[in-house]
Image 1 (cartoon, helix red, strand yellow):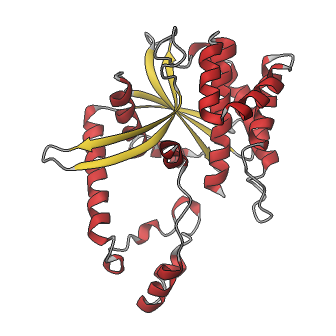
Image 2 (spheres, rainbow, N blue to C red):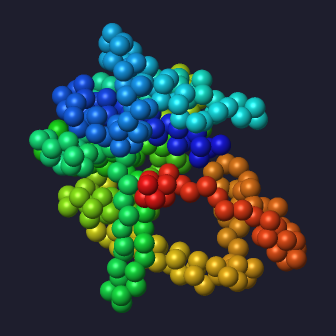
Image 3 (tube, rainbow, N blue to C red):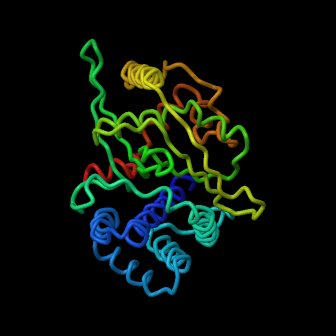
Length: 300
């Protein structure tokens, strides 16, 4: 449910950035092309038409939140009282209110203001090959939530990444200072678009707002070439472990420190705690997972 709710919320974050391009940056053609690319022309036309009927900016964004989430395919789970459509719509409006005042200083990056067909900094899927000095090649895919321009810092290009969370305490904030995910996204973004992007802003949103001044948190981070080298080493090591044990998974090392990450027990604990024979039976009953949003976008 956490992943599904996060994906639905990311659709709203993308829609709000498209709204920003159209309304605040006066780039309606870029916005239309981007909206059609991400949501498909029929869906985007429907939600955009309803959005523009509203009287003011905040009403437009609120309408966009309702319509995007209602057409996202997400539905409530009776066992999850936090990740409900109602809470997500409220969280979207809270996010909009908290970030709206700064939008003028953080316009969406566009590759060419004269050509709406060139890349824009909204939901850009990347599909890269990392090549190491010994010739090893690894395919690396993902999605850049946003690419912004910092008008206060000499139009410095800055990555934007949205995170939904149930809590955003000091531990949540500190984890972003070294997190490999952002390093990889920034590296691939630079390679993909030929830009310098060593800074990022992490936008944290609490899905169930508490109205205590901590429902939205923006954390600036920075990366260096040294960080990219460490990330690339980490990627390679993970791939090597997978390749070594993808067939003989029964003898792979157990990283038990991960069994209770993210404040909840791992869903695979019953699998790992079973007997070798029981694990083999469970393995044979497993089915392929649904492709991730990035994988689906690349396939499309």
